[in-house]
Length: 471
Ligand code: OOG
Ligand code: NI
Image (tube, rainbow, N blue to C red):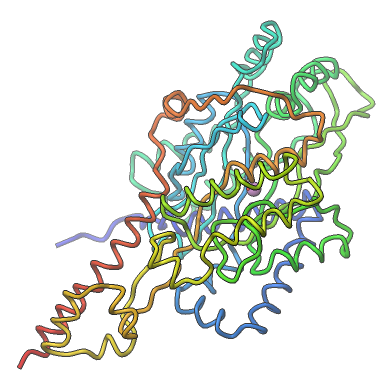
């Protein structure tokens, strides 16, 4: 007996899709090389799919082909707990929740981070837009006076428009936004992520903060947390990496993450170096300053790893570091990486049977055709057996998150060698969550749920088939 609502709410998936597309359009105008990168990735993806029809079929079946062309992640850095917790509320309007905790202080970057992203299977398929969000850790600035000055500057700014704040509160109170409100929300929210070429501080303040850490200057000296990159997903990152210089992009030396494999795992990333942009500092009429923060990145995503798989990945990566000089920039890094990862199984069959990676299970045509006692028996039998008999497909669950070591490599390629300051390993997840105003999801638990959900559905379907076709 429901009555027709006066305002129909726009689904949060749809608001997220509109926002992601608006962000992409904005960034294309702000950083023209981003447009070149998008075109390059689209070309390579098309060529890769043409050369590998099996990949096309698999991605089609998994529902991933449709999202590939719009799939992006962005990154921002904020300065205060209030900014971080309001961002959490802003992203919630678009169905994005904080997933994972990343401590980057180990890598010499004075921030800790989470990724806002959709978590439900259907929402990920609709549009997996993610934003890697870092909070500056002023407590890691050694100079007390500078720390106080940075805090005071941050306390003065408001990074959200009045209207964005009102629409967030309204969406929370009413449970959603109607069509016109959703468009307005997207426009207003975008203002927070825009580039501002006018600094809020004078050149001397900028220099002092920059000297403490370039990233501190980036977070503290501007009106808002400009989006610093927007990353498309490629199906062949090695091809993209070698095509970047051809199109005039200053690519970083190596691809971060695991080596090239038959079965891609986790995440591989590369970037082009940050651009030098002109800035006008307060009290400087001439406007001759500059700031280097924004860059371009591409990534290739593979299957998500279980805790066991992730432990093996971390162990092999540590081994690569122990085998030679530190850092992915070392000349023999690629060969050390390939050598160490020979110990990581590279067929989906092995990855699944050894419980190293996550798969989603679905009935094949043969499985869906089972009837009566056969369906009932299948409903109760072992999954590996069903896969071997061709009754069930195992689809890789794509890794939707980030890798702190890679993130550190990306940060550093944009900071320059001299910026690799040392901070003690300093994970502070509880403090981060207190600032955020919420717990972050454990990403591995989300993949476990996705796998379990597919198994429950499959067994339920087989039981229903058995009942429907019982003699
Ligand atoms: C974020 C760097 C991390 C990724 O893809 O790992 C990142 C930043 O530079 O703010 O985006
Ligand atoms: Ni990134």
